[in-house]
Image (tube, rainbow, N blue to C red):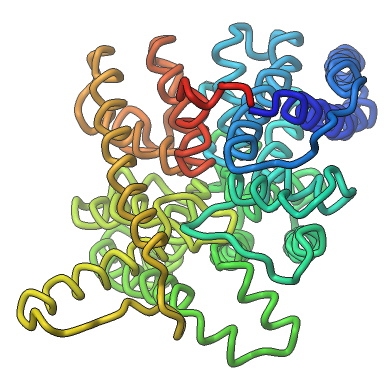
Length: 481
């Protein structure tokens, strides 16, 4: 392990977090929340000072191999969350640090699970920071840093992007990693700006539009109201639905569209399956719930909203879907597992992995029937490497081991199986709300400190695709070379 480069990169992360904290400080000044602004400024100063200390000595070797990349990303997200929780704790708006850490990790990992009983009682600065963490974590802090400056020499920074990005494989859109990061953030910022303007046109004030679009484009789900977005007009809810669906699409498709390669964009198999699953689920749920709402159009609107919210792991709620029939709730649970596209800001196992898994199963059955047949698994016209297939199989195996281990520990609190299962599922897949005691109109405050610690680990593991966090706790990872 090259400890010097890990320390150096952590310094950069904290310096950028200090810059991010200036935005809620400015919001506090605008709304004359002087005490809250003071504590945000103090936290920013602590981040800056710690970052400068970590960066005071440049590393001699600047290469970032897989081990350093995964460990650095996992450590950075943990440190970033630890410092990001301080304003909530210092202002006493969340009096217990474990709760403040839970809320912050939920924000950065774009989970949207909350321990707050009354959201409206928070200051505007804290509400802004709470939602802004979604936007920071949505695309990833390292993608942002690499888009701004050449942090490290050489071409090994791709290991940082691989550790932070979502999906079974991460490649470069263009030859240089920094240019790829710029393209991703240009698309991300573009969606954010268009969404903000559209929500303002639809009647939201600038503060609500910004905080809502942070949670929508970042697929997070923190709202500024206790009822999530239920009190917003149907028009606003429809706009949010559209941007949730757009945010769950693989950003490679947007790059192809912007490059004029329309055929390549529509040829992406994962995107076609993603949209097909959404429309198919909406059709079944609309039929299943149509008697619960005044008109079929209301049923269709809520169905589209909740399917999009759950599948993209956003977690907003336009209605209390915990009251829906069992068939509809079961479909939503399945969508929690599937998740959005790889290379998007969405969570879950990812559509691409399920496509690969289904193709692998079909290949095995065909091989059993015709032992001499040579059949290759292809996706988007390209033959998948054996390493990709192995990585998908291992990921899904580790995922379910972690899922069941977490449910076992959380069950010590004595809640029902539905609560325990959906609480872990919602955090591990970065969804936000679950069912029963953690449904869309409730929160995670009743869990013990131990369970909250497990759920915090699950949120981080889910956002970082499991392995960076597991590598971090692997003893041989820390052997110096």
